[in-house]
Amino acid sequence: MEVNDILLIKFLEKVVNSGRYDPELGLYFTKEQVAKYRNMKLEIYPNDHPPAHFHVKSRDKSIDAKFRLDSGEYMSGKITNQDKKAIFEYYNIPQVNQRLFEIWEKFHGDSNQKTKEGIDR
Image (tube, rainbow, N blue to C red; front, side, top):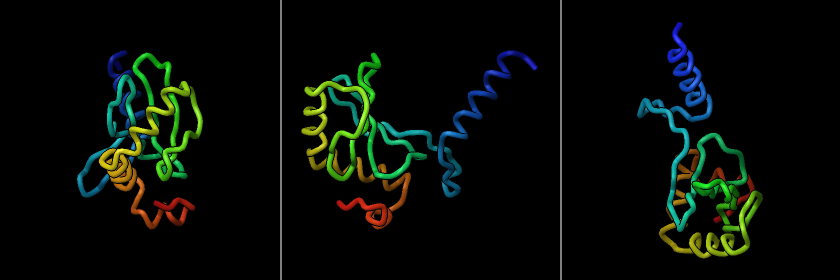
């Protein structure tokens, strides 16, 4: 087996093992970028754990944090207080908030499931 074949196999295994398969669409989902704001990307992962949350990352890796989906509250990670405030303000834009919930629900189920996990909209 060629080196490139081995690298491709390892890459595909990583994609398959880190995502969620949708049998109706016949597709694997790995993550979805919900939005870009300033130098930050807001992302939701399909194989993530409760409570419902979104990730915020920057291209230069200076930001890598998590925020609760139900409140926009900072959970953990590396981010400045100024950027936390900016994310919270951005989260409170109704269209952004709605999109975050839509993507979480696409990957993890409906609002009733989140409520069972102790999360209420």
